[in-house]
Each structure stands twice: as structure tokens, then as C-alpha cells.
Length: 288
Image: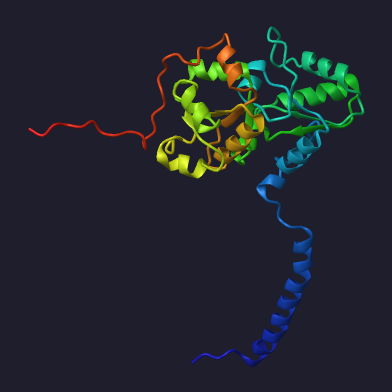
């Protein structure tokens, strides 16, 4: 049987000692530089205007209500869904979409050049935030522009909910017949009157609704819009639904009365209702 040569055998304990020292030295370095989780990272793009921030940083900024978070998308995009607390600075709809003079000029008129502010738009591939950041720096001397380059899609993908305004609700109601409208009001209010095709989901019912047919279990990309008479309740239920991987869910910024009084939609009109697989049943046949 082959044996380890004596000379080589002498080096085994030396190698083991060196290896042990390596891991002892490396461990504190790893402790000091932990690998960030997805909420604490960004695209890390080099040589781009404005400093990127992470999702965790954005959550903190929104909670503190400073610095301002500016959404530079079109008004309709913003109305359909936006990060709660973000302020819309829309482009000139008649201008070249690559020309950001309108947006940068509006921002410069509202905020001092040394004020920190956050720009965001439609996700990693959206160049709008970068163009506005560059225009603010080059044309108006802004020095503290931040960018949430991950944008609305990644914000949603990480389980965060978004807000829908009245115009956005009407757009979805009138055009998207796969959308699910969730009435988070009390069951008796829901039974008395609600939006056509709406389902009633209360706080802490997202788990049950995910499997009993109220939510489209097999269509996680379907729009799910939550409304209530209490904004915080709508937001809470929407946040719980978002955590069930409904990445296109949101909550309405108004109340049921706002929906009833809207001239942009008829909430009691007949519309094609979304039917989930859990709700679908085969037709009955008589035995011959």
C-alpha cells in the first residue's frame, strides 16, 4: 500500500496550521463586510449621474418623509401605480421624451440646488432618472441627487405595495377585465354595495383568499386593487396581499364614495369578471 513520503508528511501539519490561520484571519473580515441582502443592494453602475440608493434606504427616506422622492414618469403611469409618498414630476407630453428640460426645470423651481432628493422611474432599464439627474447637475448645479434606479418593478418584486389614484383605478376598471378589485370594508358594507365583481378580503385573510378563489392563485401577475373607507386599512390589506407574491397589487388612495361619484367609470356596470381556477367548476350534466 502506498504511504505518504516522510518529507511530505512533515508538511501536513504545517499546511493545516496555515489553513487554520487563514480562516481565523478571514472570519473577522467577513464579519466586517457581510454580503448584503437584496434589499440592501443596488445596480452598482459606475460613472452614472447621481448616486444610487438601495430599497432599504428608500424605505427609510419614505418613513422620515425626507428627502423628497420624485417619480418622473407620465401622469397616467403614476396614477395607475406609484411608490407611496412619491411626488410626480411628469414630462411635457408634447415634447421629445428624451428631452428632460421640463422635468429638470420644474424640480429646480421647487427645490434648492443643495437639497438632497431622490429620482425614480420604471426600473433598472429606465434611463429617465439618469437623464434628469444629469440635467439637474449640468444646468442647475444640483449636487446631491440620488437615484432609486431599481424603480417601481423591483420595489414591487420585493413585496412592497404601491398606491393607485382615482384616474388609475378608472383606467384599470374600464380596460383590464382580468383585474381583481378587493373590497376591504366590513362584510356588511360589502354586502350592501360594492364595485362590480369585487371580492371581500379582510385584514389577515390574505392566506385564505389566496386559496379559496377570492384571489387568482394561478395568475400572480393579475392586477389586484384594494379599496376601503379607511386608507390605512386598504394599505394594510394590500401589503398582506403583496406578500403572497401578487406583485401587481396596489391600494386605492381614496374611499368607496370617491369611486361611486367618479365620472370616469360606472362601478355598478356589467363587466367581465375575473374567475380564478379555484372558483371554476365544471357544468353539471344530467345522467341519462
